[in-house]
Every structure is written in structure tokens, then in C-alpha cells.
Length: 212
Image (cartoon, rainbow, N blue to C red; front, top):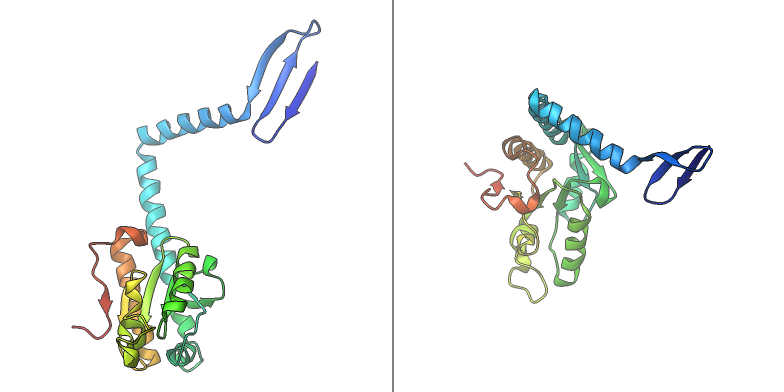
């Protein structure tokens, strides 16, 4: 007699004899773990796992830097320059700079305006919702140091006081060419650091566009 039982955590198949004796019991979770262990040991013995790891790492590094999904966020006047960088004149799409409206589909947070203390919590929330590896670009003097609102009662002295910044683009406002250059420098950084998470880049200095 054959009987099958399925629940939320496992799938078991029991083969029963006519007198009710259970000859074999199959647990899908145990089988998956056994096959995984055997496969892992075989890959390690043939050094194929190391080869696949290096190959996959280089592929994902190439794919990540060639398609920088940027969060479609506009704070103030620098957002106009961000929009201009996506127009046909500058055509940021040809450099793989694509704007997305969801932080869960983005890997670059482009801060393009002053960050007030009231808005800081929202910026941090957007940053935390983005998947790793993720990067931050501070565009314009307001995002870098507060700009004309420096030492104001309600404006942060730079977005780097709440989230880590990878690239600074100075200017008030910086032109679209500077923004595209910033994305290019970010690609060079991604090549250097690989897929390191944002919390593991303490030794990496931020890049400043135009700094020789």
C-alpha cells in the first residue's frame, strides 16, 4: 500500500506492506541536504566550486556595474540636472544608468538636495530598503555639506551624517556631465571592491568628482 502525507515543512512517502509494516520512509528535506553535501564535496574535490565562484563573481560584478539602477528621487534643484542627464541630449541610458521608482529594485541612492532633519528618517528608510550591494551618491553642495543652509537649524550638514556616501559630486548645481562622470567613477570603484556590502567598506575612501 502507498500513502503520501504533505504538510508545511516536509513531504514524506511511506511504503507499507499488506500487514502494515513500514519498509521505507523518504523525507524530502533530508534528501536535499544529503544531495547538497555530496555535491558540495564533489565540487570541492575537483576545484570546480572555486572556478564557478570566481566566474560567477566576475559576471555579477560586470552585470552590476553595467546596469546601475538608480532610485528615482528628486529633492530640490539638482533633480533638474538629474533629469537632464536622462534626456536624449546626454542619454544616461547608454551608460547603463536606469531610474527605478522602487528602492527594492535600486542599487544606487542619488541624494540631490538638502536633507532636513524631518526628511532624514525617510532617506534612511529608503536606504535600508535597498538590497545589497548598494551605493550612495551625494550630488550638489546641499547634499554634501548643507549648501547655503549650512549650520541651519533644520538641515543636515551632509547626507553622510546618516548614511555612508561612495561618490561626491560638488557643484551648485553640478552639470549632467559631472553626474555621468560620477557614475563612471562609481563603476571603477565597483570593479575594485567587488560586491562588498555597504557596511564592510570602512577602509574605502569616498570618491570626489574633479579631485585629482
